[in-house]
Picture 1 (tube, rainbow, N blue to C red):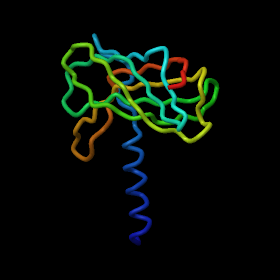
Picture 2: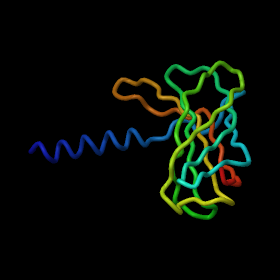
Picture 3: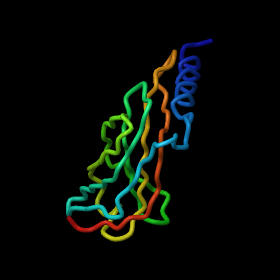
Length: 141
């Protein structure tokens, strides 16, 4: 077997492993919320926020967020925040710049995910503590 097909097969296997979902439901007392309003600046910088609570993390945990127009399948990532999983409710805020006109003031759809990277024998794998999808209103910053 030549090196190229073997390398392609290995990369495909790693991609499948990385995309394999972890637990998608929140554990007892774990949650992530999205505030009903966000901000968008003239230059396309979006700021989203909310709260989170998690427990029992063995690896690093992050609150990530994405935004898109309501009814559209296109989402844009809006940053990530390191989370502290101590069972206490904390605030999160993510800021990121989106391409011009991909998101505008008004109605938008936000997804926030509380995700841990757990060590395995091969690669860190995602483990989802909680997720929230919500319609929000983007106000001009």
